[in-house]
Length: 224
Image (cartoon, rainbow, N blue to C red; front, top):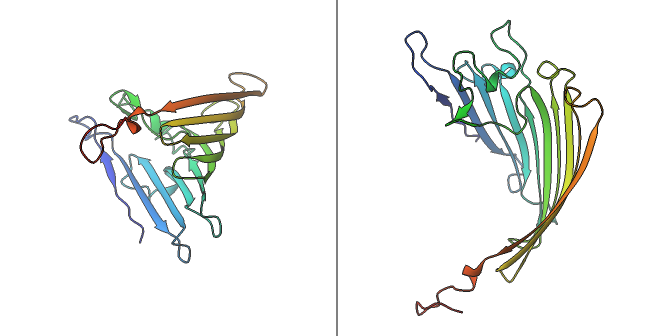
């Protein structure tokens, strides 16, 4: 059965207002007939309403499917997600980007001054997916994709961003790791630049874990 929880926050109490009321829920459910390898999950968030379930069109949503493995391909996994924060304006009671701003509560959707929320930001919609092929518990090959679109009600002329990449991680004898990745990105935001822009980035990382060498043996002394 799907499980969910309701959360509410009240960052500041005042005489004429009880606080900035927000609520959310999250759930996960193993699909019938595919329970051993497919899960459906999601979460919702709403501002100034008691539940995203009661006001689905005025709430932000994030949902996805997780395939822990595939038949005859036990080392391959896949995760696909969609996200939506482009809620309609309700007769002046909210505005584009209202999830991250508030007329009364100037701190907005923050925690100790740090912005919290989804990678999609405000007034947007998008999707992302990534798949891993695991050679062992720590070594893998990953392919990833992401697309983001921002509403023109929030940014004049709207805008979009798409990127995809490949990453590889390989560990030698548990103490030395090597990672490399390449990513291609394309974006267009007319309010910043009139034409599309593309870029390619790459990085290489080396990790070393000496504690794997100096582990105590069965007699309590360090092994060198």
